[in-house]
Image (cartoon, rainbow over all chains, first blue to last red; front, side, top):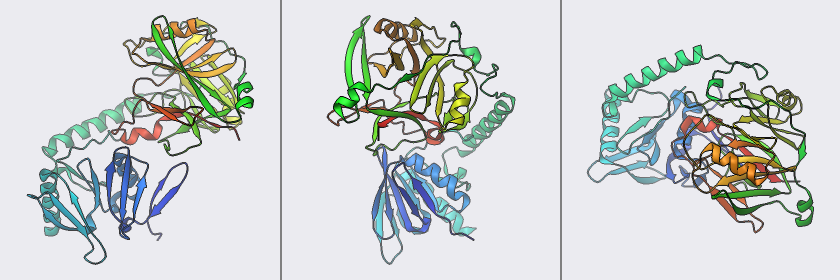
Length: 121
Length: 296
């Protein structure tokens, strides 16, 4: 079996990265910022919706990513802490990195319910 | 074909096809709408005939009002005189007023032209000019009309009789129902796309679509290839008449309104027009651009 990578390519360059190396991708207008597990951040010349379609096409059901509102795509494997009232979502591997992402209360409530539901299955 | 996937700030979506409908507000309604859309899409897709370029049975032909006699236009070369003088690629940008319509002319120098399919790299400094070329079907996101990308046919059909063929750095802009240039472009790694015809041999061509919008066109005037944009919303008729009065010999439409593109002037300053649609989703794959780069 080949390891599955996400490949993001433009006319000038190419990024090839394993999904588990991505912590989250945030929208930056017409561009997106990809935050990696090595704490590097890479600017991608795609809108977040386009990145979502790339992930959907290339990774399909093995995708670990969840779109949270308009602003961010997170790797579900790094969800560590959700606080709806403070609209805080912490992504961490509890070792090398910790990132705090904000989202709407309703979105975080939906995310919390999803994680709870999956934990019961 | 998936529908464009908008998302609100209070929604989440599992990427990759997992079931997340229960986490959206009124998710079952969205599911029903999605299923209905998919079923209608499949029916339309199955019933919608596709024909190769030479045949005249395109499903969208009905929206076009043909009023011209198909005539193949002579080849024209990109302007080279000024290119040799300046020594670098740029786009000369100038405004003029014709019939009370302000037109912005983008006249390229020292460029080679091609087509690009998909999201364009805005960071590519080699692209001197970019403008959206072929239209995209609203129902399935496909390219409207025949389209050839570096010799590879990407779409077939004759919904619009204007054409642009780029073969061996030679550009032809004209009007014809059946053009051998489609085949020639496939044989010689060229490019080909179709659009509404606006001017045919100095004569105005009427088109069916009504309403007003910012209009753009690819023009040939005495062998000089350039593009024109209106700075105000105009009808197809008034735009085409302005091009005729500008002295254009042949012109076809380019995607207007807020379609994104840019031109780089002689100082190296990029002038953008239109805007990038944040909700393009799947459709961006079939967005085509007329691209001009500096000659090697």
